[in-house]
Length: 527
Image (spheres, rainbow, N blue to C red):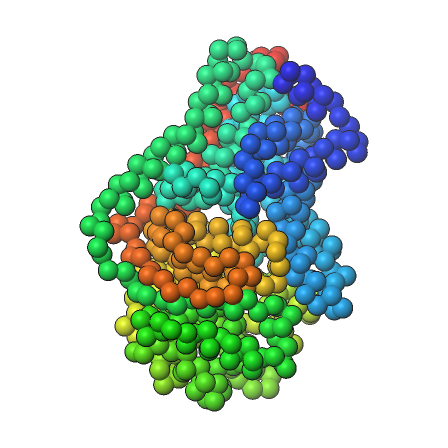
């Protein structure tokens, strides 16, 4: 049956072939949060492989990868269109263009990856499943840094409901988990012929056992690390997370700004404030340049717990006239309203915080303010008074694996992600963003605190377990004990993506080697 299906897929031409590839990519996005439809990948990746068998040269492989990526990324990042609907009059017309345009750009990454492996592709050969897995991993790795980088929701995140499997991210990161996932998704191809039934069955069972093996190893890690403590360790600190759930269209309304700020302060001062070490607000929760407005800082002092601190996002302005610059920043204030620490966002959102090639493109950014934001120097460890040192991450800075901590200026003991997902409404975007933050906690072995204006806010343990959360568009506060980091650093925190890159080379090299073992066979061919 699979052999007949493979023959029919390869035989398609014209719009039918293109349509199938586009739809396969679109359906493949259902494997990601919040759907987690992992089994759908067992149908999607074979289609990609069988169509790859029909390509001629790198151009055909590039076109195939781009078309598949167009569908896949439209399904993954459809939420970007919701950001254009916040101000429909000004940006509503851009919604479909933004969704398709972003997907078209992101589709270049799988396109390049398939074009690069096309010279070593042997149509019909079982070993090409290894080459395809390596190609997918290559595309995801390039996506972490190519064209400013946008590694949103890698394929490995399909396993987020499985706490055991997730632990493997502490060894080889989410990209390594994506590599394994792509390999498993390709296994139906092994049943199409070219191998004896016994050999094919053994290989399929071995491949399908990989997630089970990772789940078992992961649970062993969970049991070992959770049992290592005495159970009475003091938490790292006690924090109050404030989520007022202010709609994005109201956030920068000048008539509502003062009322919104008073709402933040009132929620911060609810009973129990004297029992927390720090109150935390989300990204640009304060719509004023705190460093230039003493009266605003005096008002914010009301939200500082006794002997503690307030951490909030706010814009920062430096210079005057032609030298004036804007920053998306984090401020920490003490009980007197004095700024005791500050951090500038270093990875800015294209078209949200700056316009690439702004001198040539007739477009403006969609966020408030006329000027572009300036980038900060990069990730760093920040110390706020007597609080444990932390690594701040503003908005989507949390999506970059291996780039959320700078241990050169000290080891942080927790990660703090201030964000505002109010742009994306009730789409999959906020759910995916929260799950991405969970993955960083596992990779780095650090707890992560996430505070979002409209949600999802919460605390995640260094093992990736959600300890407390406020749902999307849920108004409220969370008084939470932040757990301590793992005693021993993770492999990923030492080596970053290098272990994944080694695995990718092994997968690809083994696939090429096994393919060459059949060069004299008429059963397999490059076309």
